[in-house]
Structures are given as C-alpha cells and as structure tokens.
Image 1 (cartoon, one colour):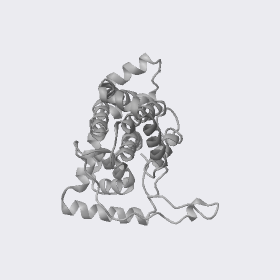
Image 2 (cartoon, helix red, strand yellow; image 1 turned 120 degrees about the vertical axis):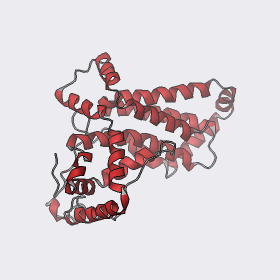
Image 3 (cartoon, one colour; image 1 turned 60 degrees about the horizontal axis):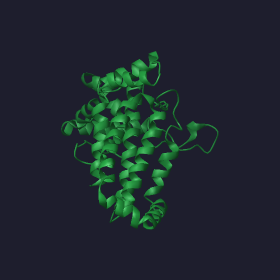
Image 4 (cartoon, one colour; image 1 turned 90 degrees about the horizontal axis):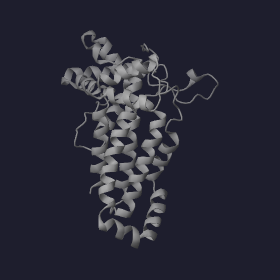
Amino acid sequence: RCFPHVGNISSQAGLTALPDVDMLRQLCAERGRVLSDEDQQYIEVLASDVVARSRNTVNTCRSGTLRREKFEDAIKKANERAAFGREPSPTANPDDGKPIQKPTMDLLRDVETRWSSTYSMLDRLLEFRPAVSILLRELEHLAAHDFDKLGWHVVDDVREFLKVHHRVHAVVNFEKTVSICVVIPVYEKLLSLLKKLEEATPLLIHAIKASMDKLEEYLNIERKKPIYSIAVGMYNVRSAMAMVLMMMSPAYQPLTLLTNSIGSERIGPHKRPFAPRNGLPTS
C-alpha cells in the first residue's frame, strides 16, 4: 500500500475526530483526568471545529483581489510594527534585535486528498498570524473570523499534531524506491511519535487515538501478508542498513529534531506560550 496515502487517511481520521468532544471527555474520564476550568475552555474551542474555522479565515483573507491587496498591506504593517518578532539581540535587551521581515504572500488553502495540505494551511496561517489579525480587525465586519489567544493556541496544537505526519511523510518520500522493510519501521516510528504527543497534548488524545487506530488497522493488514514475512525474514540485514542510511539522510534529521522537541516548550497541560505581538492585542 502507498504509505503517504495511508498516512493521509490516518491524519484525516484524527481531524474528523477533533470536534468530537464527547469522545474526549470519555477518554479523560477513563484515564482519570479531572478537567479544570481551563480545560473546559479549551474543549469548547475544539467543539467549534478549529480546522473549519481556520479554513474560513483563510478563505476570508483570500476572497477577491481587493481583499488580497489589503492582506499584503497588513503584512507590511506587521513588518513595520515588528509584529513577527525580532532576531536574537546582540545585547541583553531583546528589543535591540533586528525586526523579522516577512515577504508578501498569500495564505494557503487545503485540499482533503492532497497530503499534508491541512498542515501547510495551518502552518502558513500561524506564520502570518499578526497580519491576519490586523486585516480582520481593521475590517470590523470580519472580526469574527479572527481567533482569540486561546483559539490560536488550539490551532497551534493541531498544527503540531499534523506536523508529526508531515515529517514522517517527508522521510519516506525522500527515498526514490521505498521497500516494505523501510516502510514498516516508519509506521512504528509514527506510532511512537503520536504516543509521545499524547503526553504533550492530553486534550487532543481523542484525535491522536483515532489517528493511531487507523494506522494500526493498516499495519495489521500488512503484517498478515506473506510478503511481509518474506521481507522481514530474508532482508533483515538490508532493513538494518536501510534504517541506518535513512537516519543519516538529511530528510531524517528534522524527524529526529521533532522527536526531541515534542512537548519540550509546552507550559501547562496542553499548550505552549505565544510571544506577545507588538502592536497587536493578545485577547
């Protein structure tokens, strides 16, 4: 089977489960997690379907030539306000760092059948968050399409969930000819990354579980095939060499960094902090 296709099915299963907060509450109860008021607010954002809301925000910012021109102006304003942050400062004062300048470009739409397109959409949306907020708040009738601080946090968590699939796909696609002795260990790697992500984002466990269940379903199909036994039995040396070569390849390095970074910058039970944006309200 085509691994990227299976990976896309897995990530779509997770995205479909995201608004199902009843499943989330049930899993939390089974695992003995008592939901705090902050958790309940997070769950309310999930119930609103943050991916669909993000898609609507992107479509709003891309709607028509005039709207796109206004978004380009918003990027320029964000650059002038240093809203995209600053480069590392040569002094002790972080404000001495050179403002990060972003080029003018469009937001990205996602396509359900295109691998990693939802990740790319959310990644670009978060990258240009200051410009998006400037545009939507200048046009008051569009302000409802913007997210508040917690909403942006949830979008960021969903992006982290999709990033795991995206990086694993990149490793497999780096190989010109992918054999089963390479794909099966990558399946296992993806499952281990998702399990680690469960600990870092416990309020996305329902989506992660749906994604893992779909992966396990396809992995069990592959394990029952005679060709799998032959491949593992006859080419175990090749498999070990393939894994060594894959881990040495440039494509695998981001996956290693991703493994080490999951949850490392998060604060509290389910999110990492966003740096304040100069010139933009944080609520």
